[in-house]
Length: 94
Image (tube, rainbow, N blue to C red; front, side):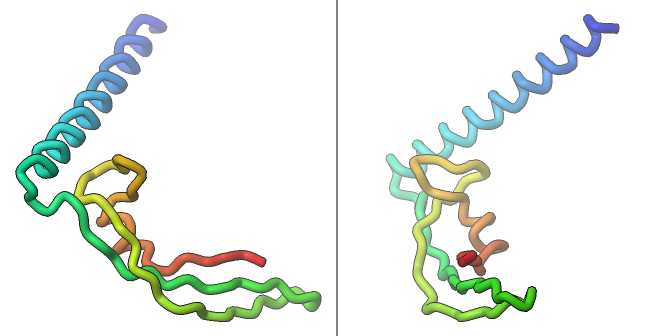
């Protein structure tokens, strides 16, 4: 039973490594060919202030453009664009 679990884990880890490597190779190809490897997404930040009476006050800040990479995984210090589009509002807890 241990052998089967170990082989299954090794197979999943190998598949994940192959997907990440392929994603990185596609990104490098897009950078070399200048095929829009990067993009910008407008992200709205807001302050989440906890008050003494167990309520929360929200103060919205101005929206900022944030750079992202067109890939499945984060590369080169940028988050993927698909993730930023789904999480376009970011709280700052105070």
